[in-house]
Image: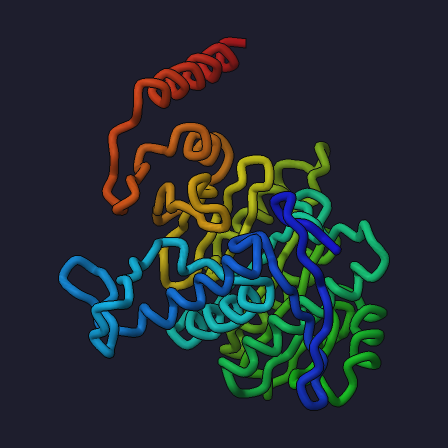
Length: 340
């Protein structure tokens, strides 16, 4: 059993025909309990019905006895990990279809992923759960994309092990960055799975090859930054310049200490959600913007709601005196740091 945002969820496998897939029963990234997930499924079914002028869902049967259900901003969030992987695959395929040649999709689950060190294998079986998560993303993307999809893994040993494990059940081709020719002319989409810092140059070479062949390239949960202090400016600039050529088409990044999540699903904007204390299992949309909120900008949003904080109706609201005071205090702290 694992926990996201301090709430438990269970990673298990579900077999459909000859295919075994990972399944999570109550992920707290977006919906911490089964009851909350069921509630949102009810909302989604209701959202398919006609809406009135005020945006309130109207029952297709026009039954006056049924209460109207208001659509919430957090309905876009996934119900569980399986739903998140499905969303990621569909968003990636949609972006590729729209002409995006370089994409990134990431699911930064705290118990399985650390921003600095990459995959976290704290419990027995976590390594295989991690690769099953990657496999599910590749399969979902392949189903939505069509054509020949190739999954490229960081090293030859891992690729051989997974090819042997998945065998004929894999609906995609498998190779590694160590191969002399990781992709072929028949490939219509290449997905580099979890590339790490040592593989940066190999990833760049494959990206250039994909461009030459006119084949879209996707990176799933890349970790090309090592966090080493003495890495050097040239290497850091090379990595940043390379990553700037990619479009983040799906991102789910929980922030456990703040009970919040940073989320993006193509073609939407970046969104920050914080837990709704009055409605356990629900999240309020705090801000929405074209660029990814990081660093001090993200801290400002989490602490004070950000400049684009919204009320319960999705309308930008003015900050309270306490929020303004907190923002002023942070500005002064930054000013003092700059003087040192």
